[in-house]
Each structure stands twice: as C-alpha cells, then as structure tokens.
Length: 252
Image 1: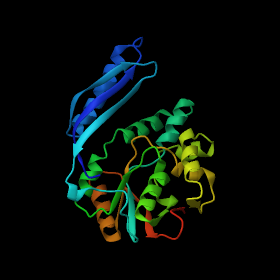
Image 2 (image 1 turned 90 degrees about the horizontal axis):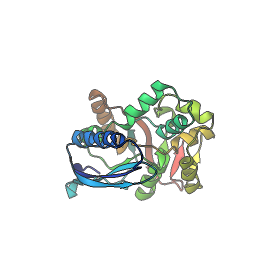
Image 3 (image 1 turned 180 degrees about the vertical axis):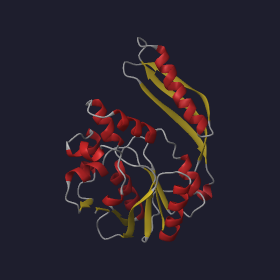
C-alpha cells in the first residue's frame, strides 16, 4: 500500500522432537529478508506444534496522503504485474514429486524476491490502484480491485508470464485445492472468453509471495514498465480497465 517496513515479530510453530537447527535456519531466513527490507526483528513467539509453521507480524509506516488502495482503478488504466504466476501449481507439483530441480529453483527465487524493489520504483508514478497477488490468485485479487473500483478488468492471457512447467502441470490437473475454492467463490462474477479450463485454473492459482499489480494511466504505465525493466525487475502488462459493463472480470 506504499508503506515501508519498520519492525517484525517472528511467529513460529515447531515440533519439539525435530532438530532445533532446522528452526534456526527458518528464523535466519526470515531475519535475512527483514533486514533486506530495511526492517528489524523485534522478538516473537514460538510454540511446540506437530506441524511446522512460520510467519512474520509486520509493522510499517506510510504517509496517509500517499496510500495505495485496491479500489481506485480507472477506466483506461493499464495493469502491470511484477512477477510470473504459478507458484501454487509448482508447490503442488513438488508434493507430487513430478517437478524438476530447475523449476523448483525458479519458483523459490520468485517467492523470495521482495516486492519492495518494484514498489520503490512505482512510488515515482501516479498509481491509481494496487494489489498484491497472493492466496486469491491473479483473477481473485483483480476481482477485488474491479469490485472496489466499480470497473471491469480485462485479463489478457497471452501477456501473462508463467513459471516454467506451470502450463504443463495445469493441463495434467496438478492444481491446488485453493484454486477450486477461489473459482467457486467467484462463480458468476467472471467470464472466461478463452473457454479453456487450464487457463482458468492458472489465473485462479493461489500464489505464495506473488507480485504486485499496478493500475495506472496508459502513458504512465509504459514509462513505469520501462523503468522496472531497466532496474531488473520482472514486469509485464497483463490487462486493462474499462467502465463497468455488468461483469467484473474477463479472461481473454
């Protein structure tokens, strides 16, 4: 939302019977990313649990006059996405032991890349609306933007970059359960003009640490896209915004 990280608290669950050094590696990984984001670890909580879990409770700050909301997209805007999609499908393929090592490496690199770098560049531009892409999938989060802004969003399938292997796995039916929940929740609120189930599954794929989508005027979008690419931030235009026509999302 245009903010900066100030501090974070660790929240961890870990089985007492497992090697405690694994938990140390997990906490170090989190600390490294907080430091990279210019924040500090100010403590946290750890409990004994049979299933390992880890997250961060983050506190930051933002100028109230410069908050990015997900409900102010304008007709005529273009949409820029800053990461490829498909992490949910890749992670499901990992569980099924059908993924190649290079595909795992690409997904891990994508998930561990901070959105801070894209956000810092975007702060130089007039962002009308912004959302991250996480568990609701690309289409789900853009639906929230479309509904909140009372506009129609057109997702252009051919412009979306996918992680290696995602299309192949989707065609094989290797889809996380969250994808189907996302689609069920938005039933009747989107139209799949591609008439292809695997495409629909991919745009609803729940992402782990997905990218950002910026909605901004077309001339600003072209400049921002160039600026992101010059600074080695992956980015591509994935759609556009029109006046609301009774349907929030078109997949085309």
